Every structure is written in structure tokens, then in C-alpha cells.
Image (cartoon, rainbow, N blue to C red; front, side, top):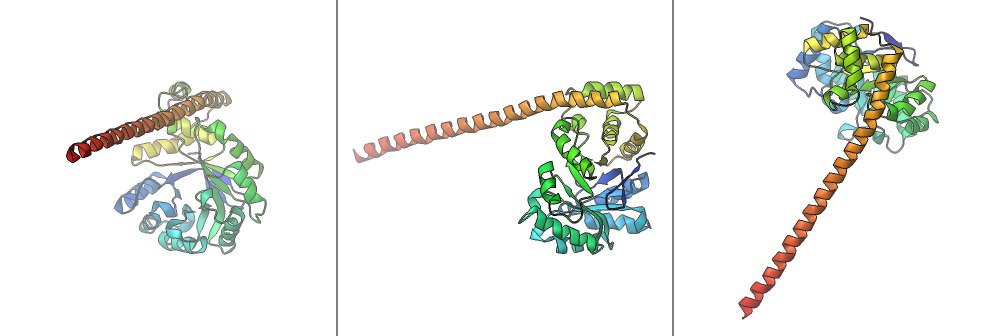
Length: 314
């Protein structure tokens, strides 16, 4: 199934389909789900310090007798418990029961304290020490990438971002900037049009393309991510769905298919922005009404208290 390897600027390659553990939690459940993912054919596992399940990722690798070279492990520095990067990476390696990770990411630009160049230099030391084969970032925009590259000795190999048709226009500058510097984009949240924002303009081209290709709309969205040259990070607790995600690697969208999804996404992005704005406005109005009601209540209560005091004095 052609979810091909994508070359990284570090000299290594990354599998273009990853199983994400962000929603699994900790304990036996993620161990069972990861075992299923491995059995199904997923060998790129995406975890993070924040997810609290790095140890659970390491367990099935050992139980299944997998060679370390057979599995691509991504984890992230999330600043958990106020730990710094040198401490965090060594903790992650211990939890994962490995001597290195294939890709180590800064989970969010807000973690770059005191600044991006200082934190990136610490990431470079991680790679230089052999603790990570490649290093990168997550949720960085083009301006933050520019700041990073201005002092970097090692370029980030990847930038993992929230990406789907309804925010593609917003993310395009970041994607274009990354491409200019040979930084691979990883995408999470690609199924948003069918999970969180159903009924939007993207539904029409997705349904038509899915019918024509005898696929599901989920598979079409994964194929759209693939067409953008990005790594797809996804998850599911259902084996049948995982198998369908693997099969999506066989789908080939035409340039016209991709364009139709892009255009529908741009239309939907405007509507979603307006809807979210109105939602925020509605919350603000409701909050204002509650404040007015509270003020009126306490004002009236104050008047009644004054009357009672007068009557008591009389």
C-alpha cells in the first residue's frame, strides 16, 4: 500500500502515515490499541510527553518482538512538569525503552522560553548527542520558522500542524515557507470536515469523489493530505477503519479533485470563521446580560435592605 517514505533534510526518511496516541490516555487501553495498530500495519507511532503514554508505546514494541529499526517513533517536548529539554528527552527515551527517537519535536512555540533560538539550540544538542535522529517543531507558523532558521545550525526536519480543507488557506503560507527550506509538513486533524464540521461545502466534492473512486470520505481526505505532500497523523480504535486508512494510500486524486476540495474548503473557511465569531459574540452578549441581571438583582436587594433598616428603626 503506497504510503511512501518521505525524505527528510536530516538524511533519514519518514513514513507518510502515522498512528497518533494523543487521545488514548494511559494504562492498558493504549497498549491494546497500539498492538492492534502494529498488527494492522502501522509502524510510525506519534506520541508526546504531554500525552502521558510514552511508556505504553514502548511495551508492545517489546512484546511483539519488533526490531527497533522496524518502527519510526516520533515524540515531543511538551514542557510537562516544568522539565527542560535535556531532562525531558532522557525521560522519554526511558519510557519508550529505546536509545533514540526517530523524530523529536517542540510541541508548541509557546514552549520556546526564553526564546526560539535558545530552545532550538537545545534541540540541536539532542540530535548531536544521537538521542534523536531528526528534530523538528509542531504548530509553528512561517514567522516563527523564520526566527528559528535565522540562528539554526540544523534545520527542522518537520513541522506538524493542524491541517484540513477548511484551514488550508490559512496554513498555506506556513506550508510554502516550509517547502522553501525542505521542511516536511505533518498533518493532524485532517478528518475535521467529517468529524467536527460536517454539512459544509467540502461535503459535495468529497461525496462525489468518494462515490467515483469507490472509497469513503475519510479515505478521500487522507488522499488529499497525501496529494499535498504531507505526512498524515491519524488514529482509530476500530481495526476496519485503520485498514481503510492504509488502503487510502492507493487512492490517486486528480489535480481537478484536489482543486475542487481546496475551493470548497476556502468557501467553508469563511463561513466557519463567521460562525465562530458569532458564537463568541453570542457568549459575550450572554455574559453581558448576566452581569446586568446580577447588578439589577443586587441593586434591588440593596434598596430592600434600606427599607428594612428604616422599618426596624421605626
